Image 1 (tube, rainbow, N blue to C red):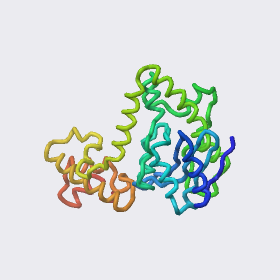
Image 2 (tube, helix red, strand yellow):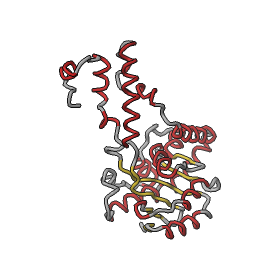
Image 3 (cartoon, rainbow, N blue to C red):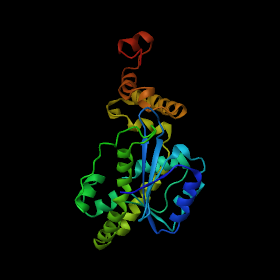
Length: 266
């Protein structure tokens, strides 16, 4: 398939000007999030029904044209399993696509699995088996390989026509209003920033702790999340979850007791 690389401010402005005339677009992102708290944007894919654009964020400084597209309520934005993509947009631009429709949500209301993957969806609707081997490659490294670009382009090339079919199916099933409400709820949830004092709720096996131990875990998880955001570091690179739980469980009172848990170097 053909795609256009967008690597300059002028190219992005021209693309977005053309896109403003489109009723719907497909969006996707590629990002890296291995050691950082915040996702690092590597690529944005956009398909307007005629042309696929691969937007390279490393060469662009003026994002105002794309932000205008994201805010344009006259353009429906389709994503698939887009929760993490929304986090990328919010972190990178302070904007979320509006209005947003997630094809995974549409598919669920049509009786497909709740976590229906994109490759499975494409194969059912088109018979094409996508090569997903590039999904975990380094999207920050340059130059991007042809295989990476083709993989990224396919994510939006197939999405838009399938989205239109799913809209028809969901409406025929009588579930379209409910599906659109769920898409709005997903968007609202993504805008809610977790309070550090609530971070303990994400700790596996927190329910096993007693009241005093749980209070300790709350303080530790609060501190860990604040440090992760401050340093832009994945939370488990601040302190691993199992170590956090162990400290709350045993509450060592000295470095010696901490060492006895095998955590002095953690």
